[in-house]
Length: 321
Image (cartoon, rainbow, N blue to C red; front, side, top):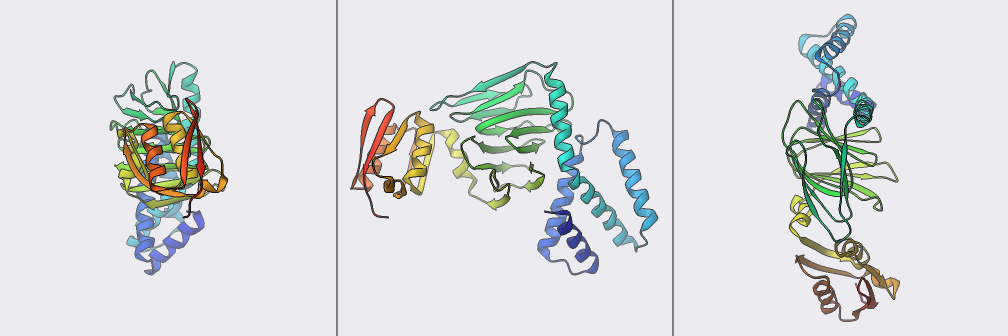
C-alpha cells in the first residue's frame, strides 16, 4: 500500500465515508506499525520518545480538529511515518547484523536434494529444513535481535520473546516475528517467494513493500515483477511436506517433476515436451519415487518411464488433458 492510498483512507475516515475494507486496512496498518517499531526501530526508549515528541509537537502546532479526529490524525501520522520507515528499519537490522557478524561466530546448516533436517536454534526455536535448503544463524543471538538467513524452504516454530524480534532474510524479502509458526519457501531457482502463516502474526517487507499476515494467509512475492500479494490459503497443504507428504492436485507434470527432482535428488526429462502439460492428482506420504512413477503411468495410460541411470529418469509418451 502506497502513502497516497493511506492518505485517501485517512481522509475517508475523517469524512465518515470510509468503507469497512478501508477501516480494516487502517487497523492492520496501525497493528503493523506497532509491531514494526516495538523494540526494533530504536536503540533505546529515549530515541523512541524523542521521535514521538517531535511528531506530536508538529501535529499539535498545525492541527485544529475536534478531539476524536485529532486522536486519529495522531495515529494516522504515526502510521504513515512508521510505514515509510519500513525500508530504514530493515536496513537498520541488516547493518546491525553485519556489525555483529564481525564478532559473533555463525553456523550454517544445509540439506542436499533428497534430504531434510530438524534444527534447534540458540533460543530454542525449531526449524525444519526442506531438501536443497540452507540456514545461517549465530551461535548466540544478541540481546536485542534474533536474525537468520534462509535459502530454500523451512518451517519455523519460533519461541516467543517480545524483547527480541525474530528476523528471517530470504533473498530480497524480510520476515519479522516475535513468536509464531510459519513456512518460508524461497528457492533461488523459483520466481516466487512464499510465506505462509499457521499461527500468530508476521510482518513482511520486500523491495519496500509491506504486508501483515494473520493465520491462514500467504504472501507471494514475485522476484521479477517485484509485486507482492496476500491471499487466503489452506495452510495444511503448504506445511505437510515436513511430515513427508507430497501432494499433487491436477498438477502439470512439468511442475510435478521439479518437486520430484528436489525431493528425491534425481533428474527427470521428457522425450516429448508436450508431456510436461499433462496433469495428474495424487497424495503420497513417505513413498518411494518408483511408487509415484507407477501411479502416474497407471492414471495416464499413454505414459511410461525408464531409468537411464540410478538418478536419471526419462518420461515417455503423451496424454490428453
